Image 1 (cartoon, rainbow, N blue to C red):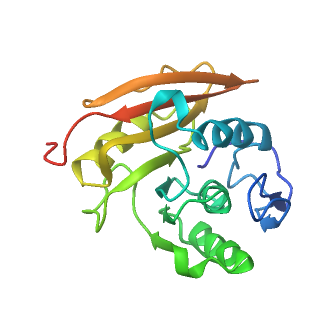
Image 2 (image 1 turned 90 degrees about the vertical axis):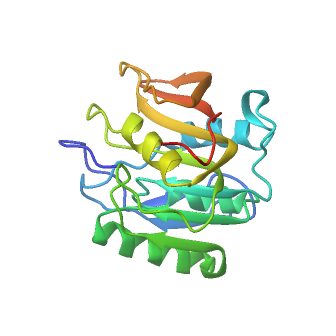
Length: 203
């Protein structure tokens, strides 16, 4: 979730919907993290609430992986809207500390887990997830390897839904076992949805 030469961002973000709607969480005031915009989050989560692109997977009760988690806004938005659990994956220790503060702000400690890891080289998962939300740095070719790592290491349930944020001009990632479902744009940002159609024996 990091991007070079990004403009400075406000030091607060707000939860868009659900039980924590309007609550503020922390974000760096410098360019070290590029949070997903309100508009993009609202569009994506409105789709996830109702089984996006006919996937049959709704957000309520889901186990969600927030990959390249940054501020944790995506995973916290998911919890606010009814997800059962959010796993935050972020390799930067300062960002992980920020996520922990945001989780504490919302009192969500009992519904989350944290992992310091490179999303393209994950360890084996303790439990598989229904939904994975990926917001990697743009233009670095990370989505495909991260998707493959999630699958290979057992982070995805069969039929899991994967959302990948990217620059509108980026080539959509491809990874074996992932079927594209939908693509939406908001300004210069695109979000691709995939279904994991492989198996837990993915190699």
